Length: 212
Image 1 (cartoon, one colour):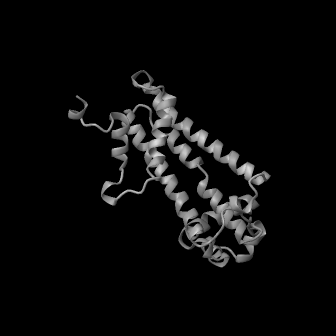
Image 2 (cartoon, helix red, strand yellow):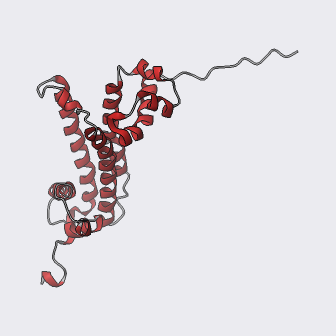
Image 3 (cartoon, rainbow, N blue to C red):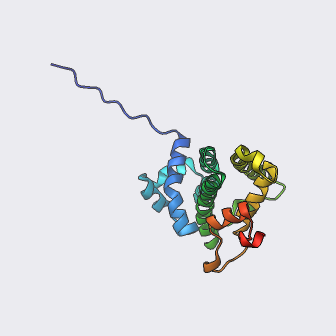
C-alpha cells in the first residue's frame, strides 16, 4: 500500500506582498468612492477577511495613503517611455510619449481627485512643510520629475543634429507644452489633441502658407 501523498501548503505572502495585493484591489474602489470606500469593500475585492487588512495597515487612512503612493508612482510610465523605439520618426516617438504621460496623469487624477472630492486631506497637508515626511515626499517628486525628463530627453537624442535647440532645451519646451495643456481650460471643440500638440511643437502654429 502506497503511503498517502504529503500535501504541501502554498508559501504564504510576505507582509509587503499582501500590502501590494490589497492596494491593487483598493485602487479602482478609491477612484470610484474616494474616502467613502470601506475596508470591508476593499477586503471583498481582495478576496480576504477585513481583519487581514489591519495586519499590514494601521488603519484605513494608511490604506488610502498607500493608494496615493501607488497612483503617483511613475515607474510604469518610465518603463513605457524607455521602451519607445528610437528607430521611429521623432513625431511617432513623441506621440507615444504623450500617450504614456496622459495615461499616468489619468491614473493619478482619478485617485487623487476622488479623495479630494470626498474630503480626504492629502498626505502633504497632514505633515508640517519642514517635517522629515514632507521633505521625503518633495525629494521623491523631484526625483520622479528628473527621471521623466531624462526619459523624454533620450527620445530627442537621435535627432540632435536636426534640432534647432539642444535636446535638453527641446525636452523642456516639449514638457512645458504638454503639462501646460492642463492649466488652461479649453472648450471641448478647441481642446488640444495629441496630434495638435506634436504638430505645433515640431512645425509651429503657422501653416505652410503662413510661413512664407
